Length: 538
Image (cartoon, rainbow, N blue to C red; front, side, top):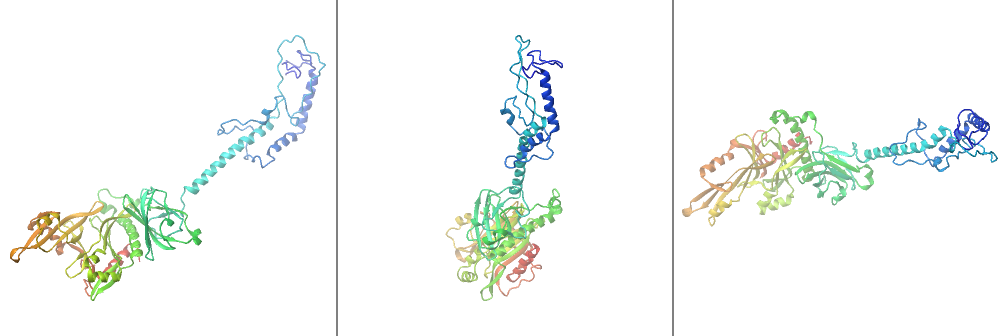
């Protein structure tokens, strides 16, 4: 024990301090009395603890089950100062432990101490009082950490997770309900945000508008001009890959904005893993059905867009017994490269009935150029235009048509006949009178485009004595008549696949399109409707 007067360390049960002579029995009596008071009245400790947790405004209640003396959270970077640290070491509150009476001043002190006295340590307060005063701070910090973690998780779920309401898939039948300020973010087949693309909105009322977008932050409907409430087909076209995707949308006014999706991501639907498996080296046998199903979904998007934009095929009588088609004139599925997966052929014309009649009377070529022929191929969950021409072939009788032929391997080729002479023959025939002739080109599918397969042209010129001279060329170079005839074999009936007539005699009827390779104006609507039905459009 230590002497409460001089702090000298003593051995055994001494009655007086051997250093200063202080009466140790008096000190023992005081300490025993203090111990009894603490044991008989534990409420003193409880009251001290209750003071710590009494106010809800300063500190929160610690977690249930927290133990006294719990280690400080490792997240803390600096120690928290205790309230006791501001008090002298020997200053202990009387609420916790009774103080020891002051040393009597009249007690004699030894003149020759045998050891240097040391200060007596202050009596330690009860352990659980100290622990309860420290723990709330550690627990409070832990509570802050838990709260921050909960906020982080909630923020992630709110801003980064995707619910069924903020994700749409290209080609879906259900329209996305959007308002003017709805944010739409397109992604490609890899799930990455598209950084440069064009956006087109085609309304069921015939209104169409588009805009170019740069950056991967998405766009809002308000960025497109003059969009009124209604139903539209939204088409997104990647400027880099030229692949495009479509999805139906319904634009609502501000009074119904609470019904609209505020932030939507447009994604390519994920293919069934079973359907996505292809037999290596043999696409036709192993995966044609799955590829055709994916292609049909993509082609359906384009047909829905064109139906909304151009309307169904319509026959216009441009002259007595002569008719022309306008609107969404043709949709047909054609397997150009004979791989078991069809491409989509479309022909549209947005010229009005009156303009068609005027063009027929004065500018036949303008009517020919009013028809847009396109070939589409399914790619990356969308479609890609692999061929386009604003032109139809024209016969001597005025009929306008699109011819498709087959090569010896049964691949389908698209034919285009113009009246443009190659530069080689232009130089050779300069100054001569051209009586007639044409330039015939065939385009076949190669990789991801419909490209030129062969070209041949023949021109007749007037020579002396009223005779005609024949000149032939292929791919810009002059050739012999024999070589020309070999190339000309593609025009015979055995190589015919199908010829579609868009301007023709009203009374002409080439018969059922399933029996002969000719589709006239009167059968074009049936052909198109049959294709739309295959794609799921009734």
